[in-house]
Each structure stands twice: as C-alpha cells, then as structure tokens.
Image (cartoon, rainbow, N blue to C red; front, side, top):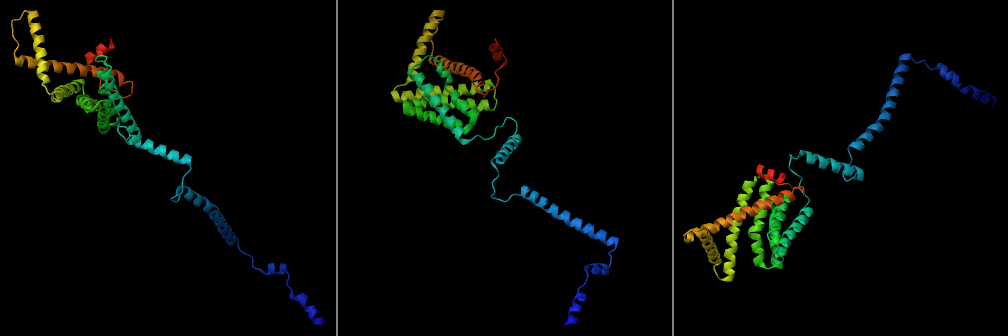
Length: 296
C-alpha cells in the first residue's frame, strides 16, 4: 500500500518539463505560420463584402425594388427613349389621352356647325369648321383625324339628320384632314390652299347634286338663271350690247365658286396661324408678303 501511494506523484508529469522537452521552432517556420494565419483572416473578412456586393448587383427575379428606385429606373428609361428619337418626333401618346382629345375636338366641330346653322352670324363661324379636325391631325396623326371626322358626322346625324351630317363631312371634314396632313408635313400655303380649293369646289357641286336629288329639281339650272340675270344687269350698266351665252354663264359660275373657295381657304389659314400657334401646334409660315401684312 505504501509503495503505491509513493509512486503516484512520480507518475504525474510537470507541464514545465513538457515544454522544455519540446523542440524549438525556427524563425522561418514562425514567419510562414504567421503569414498563413494572416491570409486566412483576410480571406474571412473579405468574403462577406464580396457576397454583399453580388447580392446588390444581382438581385433574384421576382424581388421588387423600392418605390424610389423603381421611379428612378422608369425616369431613366423614358429619358433614354426620348434621347434616341430624332428631332421633331414625339414619343407615342397614351391611348386614353388621344381618345379623349379626339372626341372633344370632334364634338367641338359639330357644335360649331350646329350653332352656325340655327344662329347664323355670317361667315364668321364657317372659318372654324375644319380647324378642330386639322388640330387632331397635328396632335395625334392620320387615324385620329379620320376618327374625329367620322364621330363629328355621326353626332350631327343624331342632332340634325343624315343630310346635314353628309353636307358637313363633304367638304369641311375632308378639308380639315387635308389641311392637317399638309401642315404636319410643313407644306407651303400655296399647295394647301390649292388642294383645299379643289376639295371645296368638288364639295360645292356635290352639295348641289345631293340637294337636287332630295328636292327633285335641278338646282344648278336655278343657279345659272340667277347668274344670267346678274350678267344682264352688269352689261346694261356697263353699256355692253352683249347677250351672255350658256358657256359664258357656266364658266363665270365655276370661276366664282373657285374664287370663293380660295378666299375661304386663305382666311382659314390666317385664323389657324393666329390660333394654333398659341395652342402649341404651329402651322407652316406664310409667304413673305402675308407676313409683312401681318406685321403691320
């Protein structure tokens, strides 16, 4: 028993002796171990930063951005799309806005025609007949202008009957589409007035033809008789001993219709020049002599 108790203390080793017995590492080994541990620490500290950057740059699908970032992205996309468009070309409009403006201007054109029919105040309101439809063409293009012309005709057919709606559509609605198309392409006043005069002259004879069918009489013959009486009075006052023949009367009637349409289209251009410029949809500039008269 005494021997066993005496051996137990000797069986335990002193930790100081263990450290003394261990071999001493060289300085190069210590440097290499220190550098390796430092690299491990750096790699561990850098890994979260790289993962956070990747999370920010590559977001998973289906994850919504904050409202502020989404608005900024939409603004940047719209600005880039507008910058890619050539000069003078506007971005495509929103369909509800185009539809509302087309309906509003079509009703405006039909109401002007309605007021002029029931409360005629001379040729004042006639100058505004084609302008709303021309404004629709300048703002929204070809399709919207034809829709405005058809809607105004349908509205007048409900308010005044199909005959008056047809007489508005031919020639005033057609003149509105024609003027809008030429003004959109920056055509000169001479071309737009010439084509408008042609459409107006055809519309005048179409009106006489349609009313002659509805009345049952040839109204053109009645118009020629009135012109014949006027020529007889003029020749008597001037002292001309000439009897006007049928060809002269018809030529004079055609000339009067053409001159009437030229003056009408010229006044429509003047009204459009003064009105549409203020609305932000300018028409082509007038000739120099007209500009000089307007400056005075």
